Length: 79
Image (cartoon, rainbow, N blue to C red; front, side, top):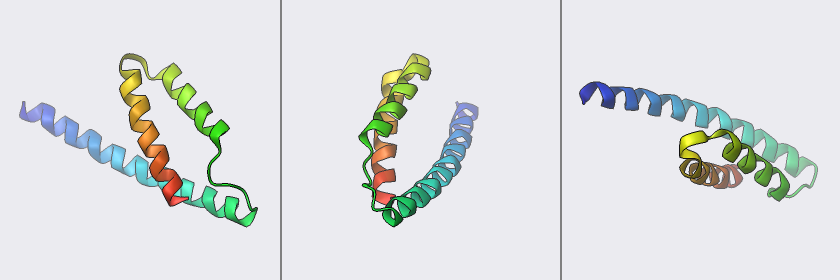
């Protein structure tokens, strides 16, 4: 069980790094939106992203979609 937990921790650390990268990009998108007087929320884009996640997520699709809905909410807060 210890080895499995170590693998989970390693994956968690990778997820953290990737989320940091994603949020930095979202921050840049927000700067561009503000500079061009565009709204933060782009519902069409959000639905496209979620549809793509559903299409590719596989076995845990619903759970992964739920996680991404929260990731996207936090991204909007950062934007």
